[in-house]
Image 1 (cartoon, helix red, strand yellow):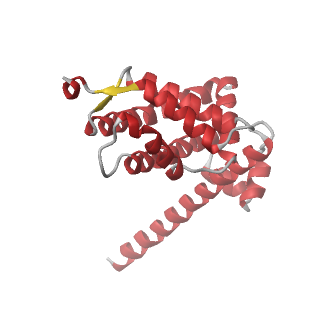
Image 2 (tube, rainbow, N blue to C red):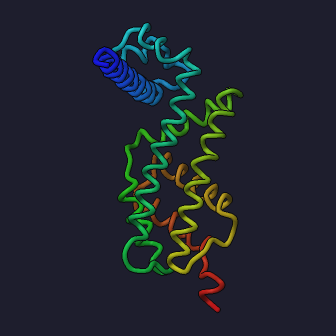
Image 3 (cartoon, rainbow, N blue to C red):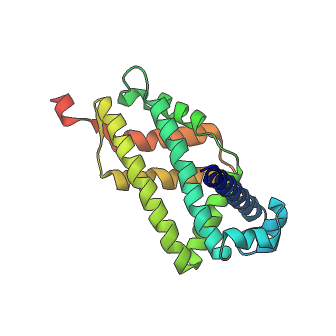
Length: 214
């Protein structure tokens, strides 16, 4: 029993260490892609950035494509966590009406604040998906998964405040996400501009619930 317990502890330690290594490699890949682009971010450079050998890399990923797939899932999971927290914060407390949308968007932006590198990484991943059919499939599936969760959460948050989307949630998210990405990657963009544009777009996509207005 003691030997089995020691084996379990050792296996857990190795598993945790491997997870940490994978995490560091994924983060290093993000940094390398922002700095050099997907094509120029070689396995060697990613390992150098992470402080690992190529052996450590290939102990965790079959190749660069495998790393890119893991990076996509990691990136979308991070965006989902940010969005969930931001939506919850922006719609908490007193009821949010259509006139309150600008203030809610401002709060959303405060909670969803991110570094300028976010826009570069977003564009690089999308360009890689356009150029690479295999990655395009992985990217599209991950994106569809997060869109479904956020769409449901946004619909429920609006309903709690007597509001609803005037179009399908998936279509509304496509519009809002495209606008958000565009203004985030616009070199001339300012926070105030982003908030105003998102507010204007959301106001046109939201209406009082029929049951609430009747």
